[in-house]
Length: 174
Image 1 (cartoon, rainbow, N blue to C red):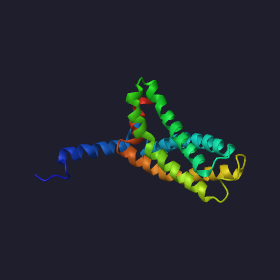
Image 2: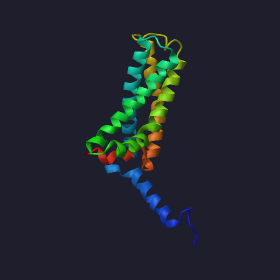
Image 3: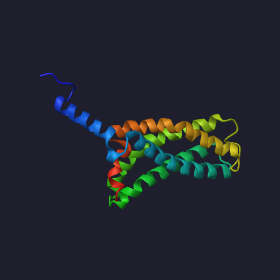
Image 4: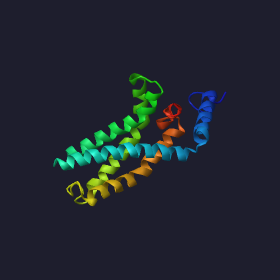
Protein backbone atom coordinates (compact mmCIF):
# COMPACT_ATOMS: atom_id res chain seq x y z
CA UNK A 1 0.00 0.00 0.00
CA UNK A 2 1.42 3.31 -1.03
CA UNK A 3 1.16 6.22 1.31
CA UNK A 4 1.25 9.89 0.47
CA UNK A 5 3.22 10.98 3.47
CA UNK A 6 4.93 9.83 6.63
CA UNK A 7 1.70 9.24 8.56
CA UNK A 8 -0.31 7.29 6.01
CA UNK A 9 -3.12 8.24 3.64
CA UNK A 10 -5.80 8.61 6.31
CA UNK A 11 -3.83 11.15 8.32
CA UNK A 12 -2.72 12.97 5.17
CA UNK A 13 -6.32 13.17 3.94
CA UNK A 14 -7.50 14.42 7.34
CA UNK A 15 -4.78 17.10 7.30
CA UNK A 16 -5.74 18.07 3.75
CA UNK A 17 -9.41 18.28 4.77
CA UNK A 18 -8.50 20.42 7.77
CA UNK A 19 -6.31 22.72 5.67
CA UNK A 20 -9.04 23.04 3.04
CA UNK A 21 -11.58 23.88 5.75
CA UNK A 22 -9.23 26.37 7.36
CA UNK A 23 -8.46 28.01 4.04
CA UNK A 24 -12.02 28.33 2.77
CA UNK A 25 -14.56 28.31 5.59
CA UNK A 26 -13.85 30.02 8.92
CA UNK A 27 -17.50 30.80 9.49
CA UNK A 28 -17.96 32.28 6.03
CA UNK A 29 -14.95 34.60 6.21
CA UNK A 30 -12.12 34.27 3.73
CA UNK A 31 -8.67 33.35 4.91
CA UNK A 32 -7.30 36.66 3.64
CA UNK A 33 -9.95 38.61 5.56
CA UNK A 34 -9.20 36.68 8.76
CA UNK A 35 -5.48 37.34 8.29
CA UNK A 36 -6.19 41.07 7.91
CA UNK A 37 -8.29 40.98 11.08
CA UNK A 38 -5.58 39.11 13.01
CA UNK A 39 -2.92 41.50 11.76
CA UNK A 40 -4.98 44.57 12.66
CA UNK A 41 -5.42 43.05 16.13
CA UNK A 42 -1.65 42.64 16.34
CA UNK A 43 -1.09 46.15 15.06
CA UNK A 44 -3.45 47.58 17.70
CA UNK A 45 -1.56 46.01 20.59
CA UNK A 46 1.83 46.77 19.07
CA UNK A 47 0.98 50.39 18.32
CA UNK A 48 -0.43 51.00 21.80
CA UNK A 49 2.66 49.49 23.43
CA UNK A 50 5.05 51.27 21.09
CA UNK A 51 3.40 54.65 21.60
CA UNK A 52 3.41 54.35 25.38
CA UNK A 53 6.93 52.88 25.51
CA UNK A 54 8.52 55.32 23.08
CA UNK A 55 6.67 58.18 24.71
CA UNK A 56 7.94 57.25 28.18
CA UNK A 57 11.50 56.50 27.04
CA UNK A 58 11.74 59.67 24.96
CA UNK A 59 10.20 61.88 27.64
CA UNK A 60 12.63 60.51 30.24
CA UNK A 61 15.61 60.95 27.91
CA UNK A 62 16.44 57.24 27.84
CA UNK A 63 18.80 55.85 25.23
CA UNK A 64 17.61 54.06 22.11
CA UNK A 65 18.09 50.54 23.49
CA UNK A 66 16.22 51.18 26.74
CA UNK A 67 13.39 53.00 24.96
CA UNK A 68 13.02 50.25 22.37
CA UNK A 69 13.15 47.53 25.04
CA UNK A 70 10.34 49.24 26.96
CA UNK A 71 8.30 49.77 23.79
CA UNK A 72 8.69 46.15 22.67
CA UNK A 73 7.86 44.82 26.13
CA UNK A 74 4.74 46.96 26.29
CA UNK A 75 3.78 45.96 22.73
CA UNK A 76 3.80 42.30 23.78
CA UNK A 77 1.96 43.09 27.01
CA UNK A 78 -0.75 45.12 25.25
CA UNK A 79 -1.09 42.56 22.45
CA UNK A 80 -1.36 39.63 24.85
CA UNK A 81 -3.84 41.57 26.96
CA UNK A 82 -6.09 42.18 23.94
CA UNK A 83 -6.01 38.47 23.15
CA UNK A 84 -6.78 37.49 26.72
CA UNK A 85 -10.03 39.46 26.96
CA UNK A 86 -12.29 37.06 25.00
CA UNK A 87 -10.60 34.07 26.63
CA UNK A 88 -11.28 35.33 30.14
CA UNK A 89 -14.83 36.36 29.18
CA UNK A 90 -15.36 32.79 28.00
CA UNK A 91 -14.41 31.59 31.49
CA UNK A 92 -10.90 30.28 30.87
CA UNK A 93 -8.49 30.40 33.77
CA UNK A 94 -5.14 32.10 33.38
CA UNK A 95 -3.45 28.68 33.26
CA UNK A 96 -5.72 27.57 30.40
CA UNK A 97 -5.57 30.90 28.54
CA UNK A 98 -1.83 31.52 28.79
CA UNK A 99 -0.65 28.92 26.23
CA UNK A 100 -3.37 30.04 23.80
CA UNK A 101 -2.33 33.68 24.22
CA UNK A 102 1.32 32.85 23.53
CA UNK A 103 0.48 30.67 20.51
CA UNK A 104 -1.90 33.26 19.09
CA UNK A 105 0.22 36.39 19.05
CA UNK A 106 3.91 35.75 19.65
CA UNK A 107 4.98 35.29 16.02
CA UNK A 108 2.91 38.19 14.69
CA UNK A 109 3.98 40.63 17.41
CA UNK A 110 7.63 39.62 17.05
CA UNK A 111 7.54 40.24 13.30
CA UNK A 112 5.75 43.56 13.75
CA UNK A 113 8.16 44.73 16.45
CA UNK A 114 11.40 43.71 14.75
CA UNK A 115 10.49 45.36 11.46
CA UNK A 116 8.94 48.47 13.02
CA UNK A 117 11.91 49.14 15.27
CA UNK A 118 14.43 48.54 12.49
CA UNK A 119 12.60 51.10 10.35
CA UNK A 120 12.51 53.63 13.20
CA UNK A 121 16.22 53.14 13.82
CA UNK A 122 16.93 53.49 10.09
CA UNK A 123 15.21 56.89 9.85
CA UNK A 124 17.96 59.43 10.58
CA UNK A 125 17.23 61.42 13.73
CA UNK A 126 13.92 59.72 14.53
CA UNK A 127 14.91 58.44 17.97
CA UNK A 128 16.45 61.77 18.90
CA UNK A 129 13.61 63.87 17.50
CA UNK A 130 11.64 64.30 20.71
CA UNK A 131 8.22 63.26 21.87
CA UNK A 132 6.32 65.97 19.98
CA UNK A 133 8.17 65.52 16.70
CA UNK A 134 6.33 64.32 13.60
CA UNK A 135 9.62 62.68 12.55
CA UNK A 136 9.47 60.28 15.51
CA UNK A 137 5.81 59.35 15.13
CA UNK A 138 5.97 59.33 11.33
CA UNK A 139 8.82 56.83 11.45
CA UNK A 140 6.82 54.64 13.86
CA UNK A 141 3.83 54.75 11.48
CA UNK A 142 6.10 53.97 8.52
CA UNK A 143 7.57 51.04 10.44
CA UNK A 144 4.14 49.57 11.06
CA UNK A 145 3.17 50.06 7.41
CA UNK A 146 6.31 48.20 6.31
CA UNK A 147 5.75 45.44 8.92
CA UNK A 148 2.05 44.88 8.18
CA UNK A 149 2.37 42.69 5.05
CA UNK A 150 4.96 40.47 6.73
CA UNK A 151 2.78 39.99 9.82
CA UNK A 152 -0.24 39.45 7.54
CA UNK A 153 1.57 36.69 5.67
CA UNK A 154 2.56 34.97 8.92
CA UNK A 155 -0.98 35.24 10.28
CA UNK A 156 -2.43 33.89 7.04
CA UNK A 157 0.02 31.00 7.05
CA UNK A 158 -0.85 30.09 10.65
CA UNK A 159 -4.61 30.50 10.17
CA UNK A 160 -4.52 28.15 7.18
CA UNK A 161 -3.04 25.52 9.47
CA UNK A 162 -5.44 26.09 12.38
CA UNK A 163 -2.82 27.93 14.41
CA UNK A 164 -2.30 31.53 15.54
CA UNK A 165 -5.52 33.50 15.77
CA UNK A 166 -7.50 30.41 14.74
CA UNK A 167 -7.05 29.27 18.35
CA UNK A 168 -9.17 32.12 19.74
CA UNK A 169 -11.97 32.33 17.16
CA UNK A 170 -14.18 29.96 19.12
CA UNK A 171 -14.01 32.30 22.12
CA UNK A 172 -14.99 35.49 20.31
CA UNK A 173 -18.71 34.69 20.44
CA UNK A 174 -18.78 34.80 24.26
